Length: 235
Image (cartoon, rainbow, N blue to C red; front, side):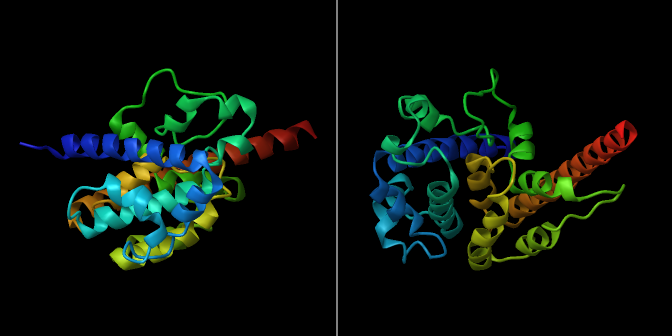
């Protein structure tokens, strides 16, 4: 019997492999990245230029939510991930590092830094999701014991979207997240939206995003308040 945790582990492993292949493809030449980016904001059927890089990686007759998730996440990787540039355009220390193109499970893109031990499934899903990223983005401008960040309305609106609405709204949300201190863990994002039409799994993802957003926001806001108080005392 497949448990929810077993399915999550399998989905995440498959998502990581897809992310690694997408980054590696984008590194080969600029045309590949352009073709993959063209899928953003379009249905899979409309994303003709991206088919050769996405369709072959999917199972036969994939569910609509699983299929669309792969096209959208691939396009977001090609657009935002600094590793998804042609190797000739990367610094020499990155262009020579094939492993970097496959290192997809971190969610943080600080050069030269890699966790010695992989995170547990639950921690990756909590720390690498879209809610945590937006919480970190909003925290420096937020204060108070019960903070509300500027990205909260966009995130809450995303929770209510159907499949088409989700993929229409995600590019706008990612434009916000692109300014965050870290990018989403692409494998986690793919994991979280691949079962969007399955109520229980969507609700579980939404709860993780919301929880991660407010926990990250509150912790970050408290740290910002403490830093401000410290600076005031120094002056």
